[in-house]
Image (cartoon, rainbow, N blue to C red; front, side, top):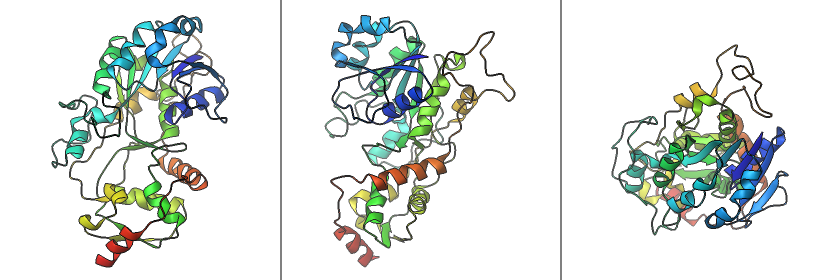
Length: 343
C-alpha cells in the first residue's frame, strides 16, 4: 500500500511508520522536520508546517496514497489547514480517550461521576480546552474539535488510552524505573487501586494496520486499549517483574507520597474504555480468507487482525527504557525516605 503519515517521527507515529515499512508498504511521512532521528525506518519525508500544508497538497495527492493516517491533529486549526486538501482516500485519525467526561472527572478530582467501562457512545466532555495554561498541551489542543470533520469525511477515529513503549517521550514507567536503577528496595506507594486503560505502542500500531483496507471501520469511532486492565498497583508490580527487581511496595498516606507517584493515590473516577467494538471489527471471522470480497487485499494489508499482548509489550518497553535512561533522570529520593519514615 501507499501510505501518507502526518506526523510520524516521535513515538506512536514513529512506530506506525516502522511497522508499515517493515511489511513492504511505501510510506510518505509529512512533518515539520524538527525531529528526524537517524534510526528512523527508511521512508520518504516531506517537511512542512501543518499551517502551510496547502502549498504541498498537490505533491501529497500525486503520491496517490491508499490511506492517510493523521497522527498529529491536535486542534481545529490543525484540521482546517490539512483535511480540505487531502485526496479522496481512506482516512485514519488518532484521537484520545480524554474526550470522555470520565477523564475530566479525574482532572477535576471531584470523585466518581461516570460509569465504566466507557463505550464509544459514552458521555463526552462538556468542558473544552481542559489543558489550557497547564503547560501539558498547547492551549488550543482539543480532540473534540478534531474528530467531527474527519468523521464527516468517513474517517476511522481511534481513541487512544495511555500509551507506553519504546521512544515514549513521557516515559510512563519512569516513576518506577528510576527507583529500579537506583537499587531502591522499598518503594512508597498509595492505595494503587485506580483503573486506567493502557496500551503498548506496538499494539496501537497493530490496530492502525488492522484498519487498512478494512471497510468495516469506515466512518467508525473505535476505542483502542488493552481489553483487560490491572490496577495501577498491579501495573507497578508488572514493571518491577519485567525489570527483574525485587522491591517492597510500602503503602503510605497519600499526603506523604512523592509527587511522581501521584497515579498510585486514591482516585475515585476510573478511566476504563470498552474496547469490544475494536476487537469485533479488527479481527476477521474464524476461517475467513485473507482476501477482500472478490479481490486481493492491497500490498501490506493484513487479515491477521488485532491481538494485544500486554505482558509482552510491557516487557519490551521496560527493557528499552532501562537501556535508554533519560539524561535528566532524578536521583533525589528525599521524598521517598520521608514517606517511608512516616509509614
